[in-house]
Length: 343
Image (cartoon, rainbow, N blue to C red; front, top):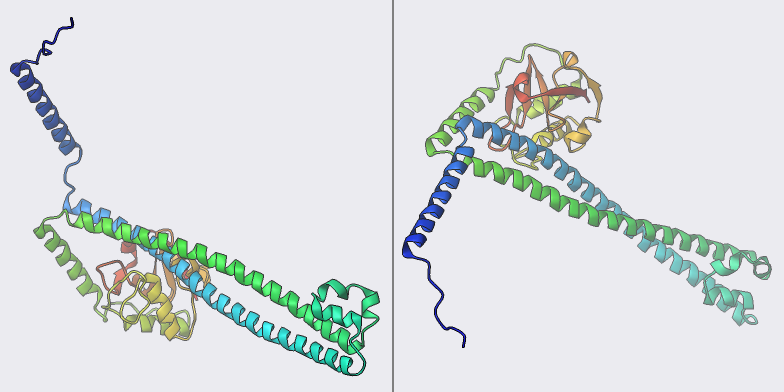
């Protein structure tokens, strides 16, 4: 008979030893993790946050580009749909006219069999048959040719509209991805800022306020450089009226701006239309080097992540980043200068 004795339980002493060992291992792991990831300093947090804001600026620009594309596609689709509706009306009128001719023929002695075929089926199938055309009057042939052309035009317009609808669906998907990317970067920046103590946050805010106060001085020393053009001078002057207004991702004025939103708005006040994003504004004029800059020229930084106005005397007027306002800043402070563009 099999034994029913209970299996031997581990001794209390052994359990205690194992528990103590496990606890020690957890403590060592935690200690190692703490040593591997020390709390970043205030300056390190600021540096990382600034980089995240730069990345968010790039993502915002791509988001703005997708949004602009969506708006253009919606207008194009609307125009195409209007053309299709108008074309369908014209086609119906042409068919009605051909029907009237057929009715008149019938009253005068019956409908020509060839015309009856045209009225009951697609004229495309018969217009290529010379023997059929020979049996119709020139007026009937002209009407049928017009119907054929209108049908082809409508088919092409419907195909074009369908293609643009597909593009619109893809663009909306891209728009959603870019928006989430922007939100992710800004969220990550906020989480980093939340690791700071109240005093550290207060110190950073005080420094930012001090810099903003100095930069927002409308009497900043801009020197006496002549602008490159009247429109550049007018755009720069318009941008200067917005000093002190907040940076907001996607902002195009007049209450808030992102970097390319400010430059686009300001040039619009000067009567000049430029595109929406830094990636497209780089093509809105003639590219120039740093030594050629004049007030009113656009200046680009950090792989097209940022744009502003050259204001003179080494100063740039721009919408900097989240939490900041439109202001002047020294060109050397803005990162890697790429090139200027004279609109």
